[in-house]
Amino acid sequence: MDRWLGDGGMPLIATVGASFDAYGVDGEDLGWVEGTFTPAGPACNPHGIVQAGVHALLLDAAMNFAINAALAGRDRTRATLELKVETMRPAVLEGRYRLRGDVVRMARQVAYGEATVRDADGQLVSRSTGTFLLHRDDGGGRRP
Image 1 (cartoon, rainbow, N blue to C red):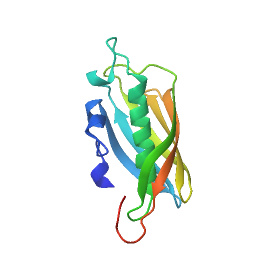
Image 2: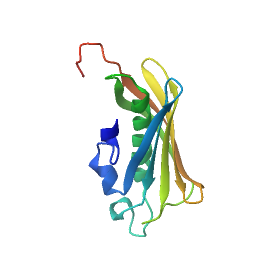
Image 3: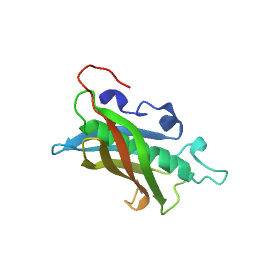
Image 4: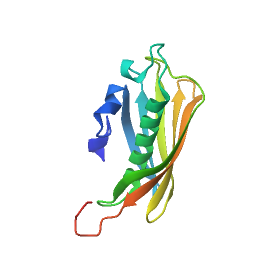
């Protein structure tokens, strides 16, 4: 998983000003990831406010990373089935924010996650919940 630190394997994440910095697993399958977000120009509207779609991009990626951190072997997330994003406060150009993604529950075929963006004072800026389809390796090393 170390190779996914930074942009998470998606250059768009770095383009908007975000980076994943640490990950781990609490207990058997409760993965987590943390990162930073300093919004860059491409993340913002002409008034310097981060677009809700950028929040969705980062929150979805954080949940995916957290789930993948908890999966064993070649098992991975396959697709986002459902995503809910709420923004409570504006994130602004060049502000400093923390990202966090967590696994809420892991089942055989799906996983449930949650993620947040918080400002420097710890206030909630945006949050998300999601449901993810899992790919479990069949032992043959094939990936659909």
